[in-house]
Length: 90
Length: 316
Image 1 (cartoon, rainbow over the protein chains, first blue to last red):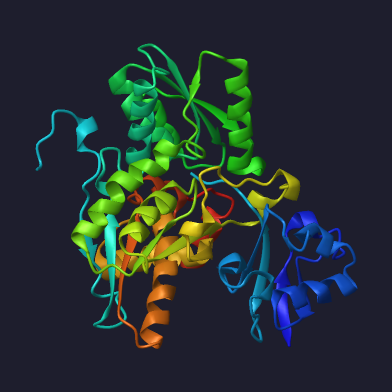
Image 2 (image 1 turned 90 degrees about the vertical axis):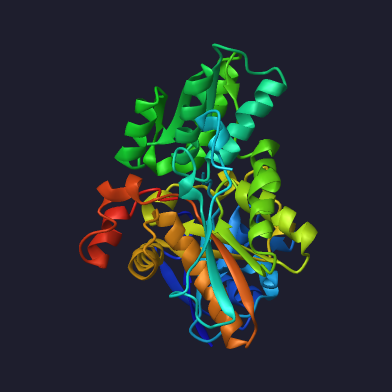
């Protein structure tokens, strides 16, 4: 099933400058594997030692995957997956 | 009690009001904690005063000292009021893409502002403040992102007030910036009611704000404790603004834009509960009023134009 993945500026070197790309998978982990097969190197920027990079946040339909099963978080059909760097507030 | 010896004593004990029109069902109710009723008009009066008083108690702050803080606005304004009344000089490091009202308020209270580049966002303001602190050994950086007195202020006041006013609370929804509100209030609530859901609403800005961000220079506040949270939503400018307007329109509450983001997450939670046939008593935080954001055009004209107007701004 196809999902749309929003790519932050800093990672667009892997997607030929594309802001959003299509990917397949029923979990976030599968989506990242699918991305890697076409945009080599991107998985290494997102995952370190098998878990999500400390300063990377991934959202499925606006919900942070760290509270929804991590890389096992389910991705529904037509979901939007958003990748963002962690930023400060306050 | 409604009589206080000075403005500094009037922080906290804010009203909790029902949102009958926005609540999706009879047994799924939304409640707003009106933090704009604090002395300088935002929730940040609680942590700001707590951090100053802790530094005084620890002997770090003595009359005539200079206080330094990285802030996108509200914490700076709260500190500026406290520093004015207590006789400290305040230097704020603030991203340049924050609203003109925030700058005017800070200057009015006598604070000095050092601007950090818009493209670097709050991350760079934090980095600049840390550098300034290292260069000026006699300045006291309270550092809201890592100061336990920030979360502790909410653990001691915001949490107990909410539980006192709504013992049946099931969900607490607040903004995620320094993480002090969520971690402090959430920790108190979960200690007393382990099943309470603690939900974060995090602002998602336009391209400009994230543009040059390097993943390895990311920032997670030292106070952040993910074990206290049960869900975290990212809310874009459009949804935040749409909900901010809806809050005025349906409940008469004129709030700042970050509150719209929090309402968006609270409504998602409410709809989930209603859909599952569960009862819910959901408390959301109204962080501040809308006054400081009028110049951004957030409250007038077509939504699309207003969204464009706040793109690139740090609205939380």
